[in-house]
Length: 463
Image (cartoon, rainbow, N blue to C red):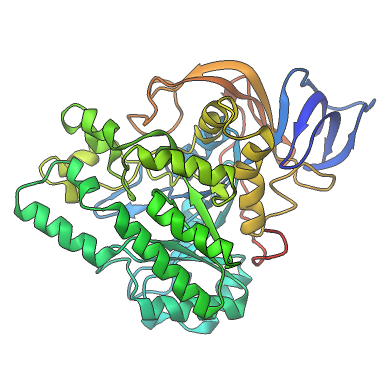
């Protein structure tokens, strides 16, 4: 199929101009002020933006947790992503203790096979260094898994000790790969959680109150110190506090290769939303890191504006309020930990960032597409608009109005964190690898059409 997009205002991380785009064989073949050519489909993008397809670098589809799974699988989750203008995700296979990461990788390939509607890559969560050799990590890198996620939280399941984290950082440095860190002081938090439960403080609110902001700051500081000694770049996932951001700012000012991600929930929601919820509805906000006091929001937005934070992802990990989160109705420690967001990331950052003059259009594209592509080895095929690049494009209508609601979203979950938010600006057409998959708010793609992406090694020159 050939597609000609005419008269669109093209927005990349650094450019803003009007031109036509010709697409053939899944690639962008020509960009020119005026293109006169026959095409199978001609789209008039007058008064609309043409942006690179969004890249969500942090999702958890069909993820096992205790005796359940996150409610979006690779079909429903990637359809919802497409509706919101995201055309690539990077998900997280997780090594089981006593098993190899290769086993996890095969399971996740099976989860995605025949279901993924957009392109996808994988990070690998490493949990058991007793089952790891350098050859295992080389094998993963050869498969295009060039980033490894390590946890400083959840003792007894996901958490690694500092020595193990340091050794994996040294291995990553030798391989040229990137370490991603979930930074919280897991042992201290576990102590606070146990104390709360013993005192009968079992409501959902205590999930947040037992995870102090200072424990994120401490862990981020520790992870950066380990990475500096190992000589390894480090990417801090879902930064939620100024305590943590301060440590990142200090390190970056010293030239340390530290990169940071945050999520819309930490920019737009606060502990007040949890406190104001009625009854067990506050369980909607049980995710980690938890919601913080409002004062952190302004600092995170400032961090985005000053490039201390490079990526906005979602940490999409949904569980239904009824039938999943209510496992913990009488004990917050049993509430499945996670929340939805994959569909509304670009909406929320446009409405609350661009339209409120907190970020520019270029910065919006950079945060949601270009920088994740550069950090995670997908650029320039993904994350920009350039000749020979993959034709992953979103035609964004700044005048289209939507109201976010669980009644109309496409995520397979019974609530939305942003229920009732009014948005002006939404995708009119979404193109993935030269194929229109969303048009006029209808999904017209096919399950299984998404391709697995072998990602390149981290490149300091790009970021």
